[in-house]
Image (cartoon, rainbow, N blue to C red):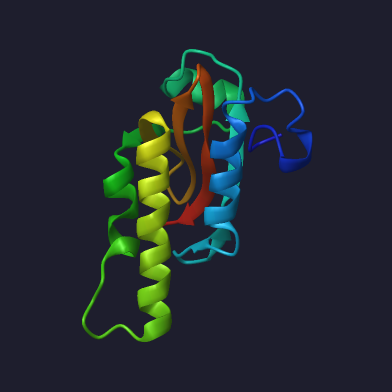
Length: 142
């Protein structure tokens, strides 16, 4: 399974982690990462392991170059508020701002692992009570 434990398989989750998982599900519902194509976000939960560039490939089964970037850098283009934005665009930017705050305020050591070059699988992950929690999406870069 590429995106970790899926929503209907949360039985073994630490009770302390469930509120964060629920908050991530709520915050990302109906939100799509804009790029050449728009992809939804999926909530990711893994039991604790040493999270690094090598283990992220092993855990996801996705082979490719792995880069890490900060949460702020990854979401920089979608949290920006421009004067010329219509109301809908401002609302989407506010939702992304909220998502960044949820990630940074609820997960320790949150960072983004990007796998691939053109079709980039992005895992925005951190830890909570020794468990790995976050979200994933795909970004197309040409």
